[in-house]
Image (cartoon, rainbow, N blue to C red; front, side, top):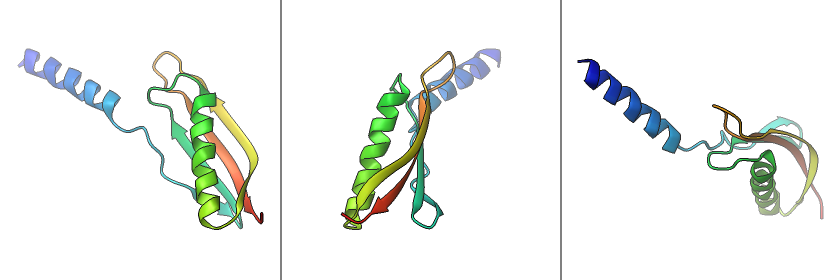
Length: 95
């Protein structure tokens, strides 16, 4: 029984490590002010997560035939037991 429990816990941990650490998507937090956040997964720096988020934000704004304008960003690098993470805020403005 104990061996089965250990196997189950190890398997669950490995599956969680391989699971998507994606995003809930772009959220409008006020008129024309958007937020996007994500865990890094295999990324070790907040900068690499931010770069990916800004690419997603740019694609989002381009789909509206607008230009992405950064407002603010925050991030935390990878640490013991913690994924790298980042959050950005941006607006879509006329070209």
